[in-house]
Length: 114
Length: 114
Image 1: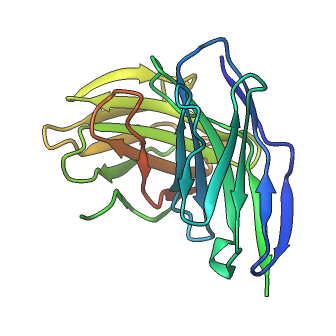
Image 2: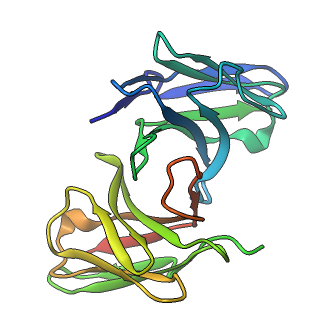
């Protein structure tokens, strides 16, 4: 079974600054997909960014970017120019190429301060 | 395009009762998955349906069941409710069961057991 570890339970960042969330995973598979989801107090789980393991280029979506280190099994999320609306819990998730479910980390609560 | 719709948003039940939760996927999405989210266990996979067939099931007792209709809408049923079933139940849909297609989540149903 895949294990996803998020070692930072909480993080706080000043508005307009940058914050980086860490995520490591354990798998023996070579092909897989990694995701970052955001869950604000409204509860809806929103897909932030996705990375295919076979792609060396790090994924970027506007102010969100990842640092994918396949050999180290590390998948960190960088939020640039943080906004108050970024306040949420962020989950790192893994899905194997032949898998059917997402395996989630415990989550990191991010608070953006005005 | 409308997102994943889950009803009801909140539900309060007592021990021993049963409950049915509903999920309408994004139009065109034929795969529906259910997850249970609790503070202690985090996000755990319940089951996945595709073309009205349960394709996969997580490690939950038989009290948890579900089904999918021809229009891809899905229902989840929990019988003989226990206090530990109190959780946020999230439904996610995607176009098909292939792992390279991201799952899109609804707002969830908050189930409280008294």
